[in-house]
Length: 103
Image (cartoon, rainbow, N blue to C red; front, side, top):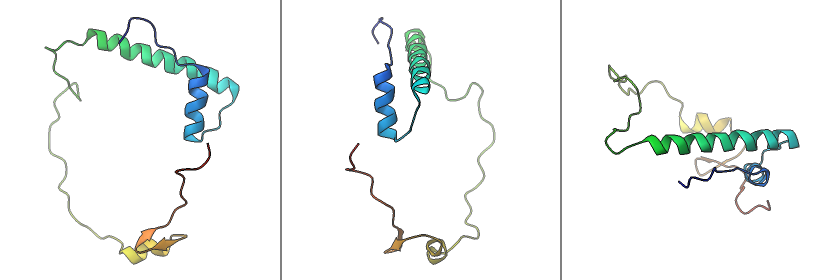
């Protein structure tokens, strides 16, 4: 990453909120722009410290024990599940399309 600080602008936050269909007040947009900029900067600093000889880890301590076995239990039938759906067709839930809508 470049050495210049990354800045998440108010316009960036407004654009992302629009794509996500999240209504934000002007104060929330300003607050999030600052917080997101700080997060990006923190990630940039961590990336500068990471070296190839340090292995990536998902947990600081080794995990012990195994996850429980995957055992099929009592489950609903497809008909039972779809019986509570507002709309179903061909054994599937019918939901409104959102792709291609005006933004």
